Length: 133
Image 1 (cartoon, rainbow, N blue to C red):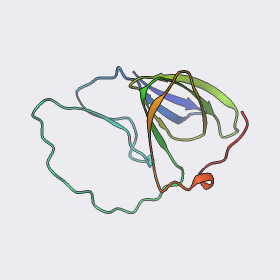
Image 2: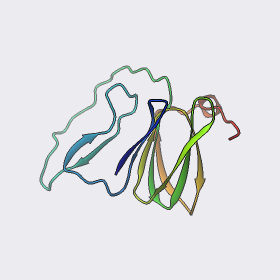
Image 3: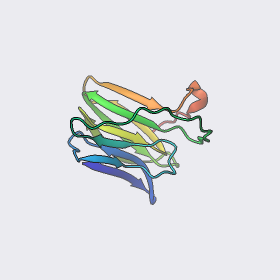
């Protein structure tokens, strides 16, 4: 239900499929990642005390992306730093993916609804380099 996409000994992405279901809090990322991904399942009545997040200066070198597939099917193609395709995965309703490094491309296999979360502010073409597969 959780899959790490590994290439050359490095994690390029983490996929949490819709069927993942465990009690408690599960972090899929180590503290060193600039984007954290966790799953939480709490019983009815559980309370999390009110809190405010403190300002903390962070340095982000690469933009990570989290995609939440609401509806539809999406193929994700993964490319190494050499821009060569090394694998693909299909995502569907309820799946979540954290894209950590390397290149990636997408093909909609059906009409798709998804949410994307990434570090900002987004700087357009300065944020990415497009290439031919």
